[in-house]
Length: 218
Length: 218
DNA sequence: AATTTTTGTTAGACTATTCTAACATTATAG
DNA sequence: CTATAATGTTAGAATAGTCTAACAAAAATT
Figure 1 (cartoon, rainbow over the protein chains, first blue to last red):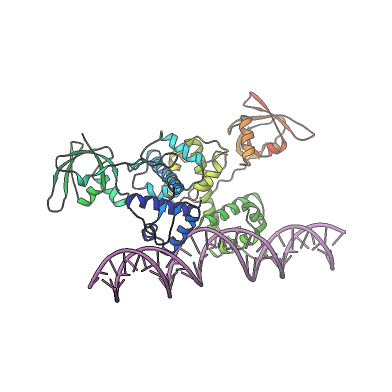
Figure 2 (cartoon, each protein chain N blue to C red):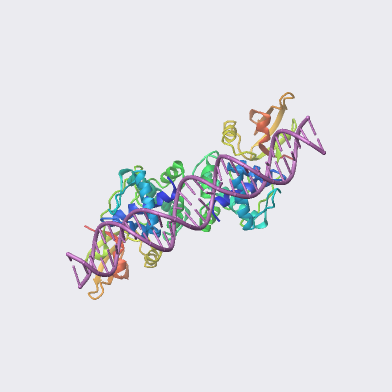
């Protein structure tokens, strides 16, 4: 499988998680590649039985396609974890590098990394690392935005890997695993005042609160 | 610069070190790419002022080409070192992986590796790692083959990264830095009997002795 | 239901890298 | 010093991945 094909599968995989149905246009936007190109690539991947394709119908991955995509995402997330844990990169710097290293052809390379990291289950952003069969554990975390005043939760994962968002989280001194207590929600714009680890008070916009994924405490 | 272009430059760089003059055919053989393809690529790289090209003349790298090639080789060797030192790979396993990772676009990535390795000067095979300007320190080691009976030398580098050769060196329990004393050279076929670190006796074919690069002791 | 907008598809062209076949030049060997 | 061999070049085709322009279908709107 080529690097390009891998990128198409990965994108479709991600889009399928976020949306009920995925269109050629969705894939086109997500890859920043024009629709006709996507159309022909989809046909090619369909002929390889990685994507199920029927004219004018939404796109879906076949079993094989899901597995292949899962394995690429596994490599990506293992590499991200490795870059953070062993090379001292910040979580806002690793995506682009992992995007390239994920395509390396060497099972042993990724196995070593996995082993060195002691078989991690999540990447630096809290996203689950698919297993050796490409299966992803489903995480059903709540958006902090959906929490009510007085509730306490644990910061488990981020809903966006956008650089600016990750930098904001860093600036707020928030880390995965932190306890977050919702102190107050502004009626007007849903801005949240929260208490982090019972010691630092921070303010979050509604948009920000949407991208902070939490597990409610007790 | 594309991955392909980088590979042409790297190959030409290596060939230029080994031979007085490098022909299109040499490059073609070394890359396993047919001559007409090489010919057109050489023209392209010539137009980018990375290779000096005149019809029917030997190929040479320009200053810029040398620098570019040196920087790629730097990345390659840093990665090899990293794979051996931090990921526990054998020196016979790292070439192919480094061949892929060397093309990663991220200065910071290689800088980190360099730093983590404490700025190594040689790779796991004893080959010099070019500096940040792509300059390679010239090593003038002797081939063990050229040594005489009774001479003592230190194993500094290998003259081949062929898998089978590296595996042989491993089997003989030879490591870079080992002291090698030439005990006897067979007149008939130049087979060498040597003493390693004053304790283990080994036999080397002439071909093998050609690929073992040493520094004479005192 | 008819029209417009959005989305999807087809056709054909372009670039990068590769190839084969044919031809040209240089080097080598009588 | 010519004939042959080796090396180098040109021309033209193939594949992968991309694009634009034009057309087609489906969805949304009036």
